[in-house]
Length: 140
Image (cartoon, rainbow, N blue to C red; front, side, top):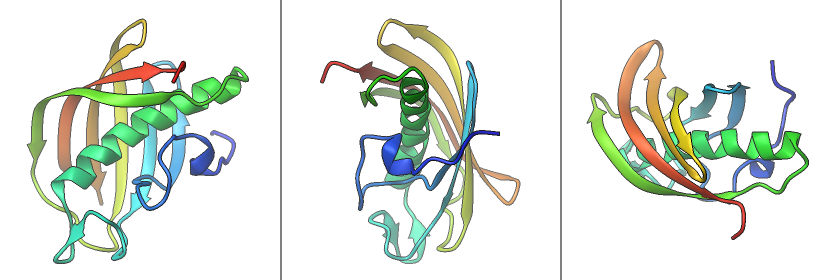
């Protein structure tokens, strides 16, 4: 169980562009987060959390992983960028009020480039999944 952090301390994104509420777990290979879809969210359209929001939720879970690792080593939270998305599958868009449970798994990391797989579930049902290349740059 992780200590409770304000998510704003772990990711470089700021409101209104924050797409995760809490970092729940993180180790060397796996990280999980939760997020409740709110009507006021930028990516909500016609009552649904849209595709770009799902993608950003996976990316921000990866960002929280990097931020948590940095903080535990007394380093500044790094910036990161989506370098590529591969094999994106979106099965269902979540409604307002849905709680998303996102899990990323680190597949490979070479210097500042991480390849992760991400999966989003709600109420046990898989909503979306993909592989993502994330470029992490602590120097920016």
